Length: 234
Image 1: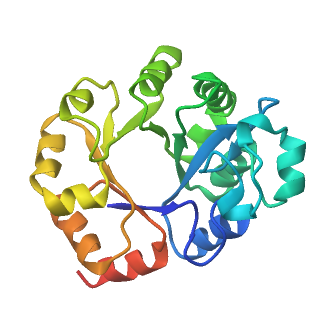
Image 2: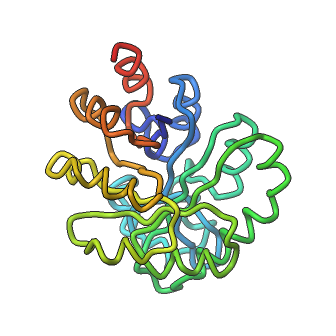
């Protein structure tokens, strides 16, 4: 079971900052998870929310602000280029989540595929995996259209029907840990489709043990070092 740092080691450092990802390396994470949005001028930045209110106490909307404006408000903000280069240099895999709905529709997927394609040789030489994730069924299908060799994960929650997951082209499915707590059999159903099982966001010892028992492939956590320690004792 591989451990992915959810927005970096986000329990210890501000989420999706270089400090959080550097700490994730120190804590032994196998890879990094991050969220992506497009700025008004088409720069893919690492940001979860539609605006900057929660993390930067600013009401600026990502899609309505230029990269320069975002950088001025929150100097720690990272771009897709920066996280790709860092992941390659550290030999850490990536789970890249594209956020939806957004005004630019699938422009973020198109740019992301372009970036991954441009780094294809470096990615291969580093031995890392790059997987694009989304709660948007259409976003996953757009990735398939653009480059079917890129691994994808269709993210699940309590509001996404099972038939939607069944007909997704994604090679991995990503349920929330609360879904596995409620219905552990979901893991078996996912595995029966021939897909990998990527689970988010797993921080508690009992949930870590459950993921181990269910054969989860990729565990996404705010606490990579803590998860590593728990797994050593299972």
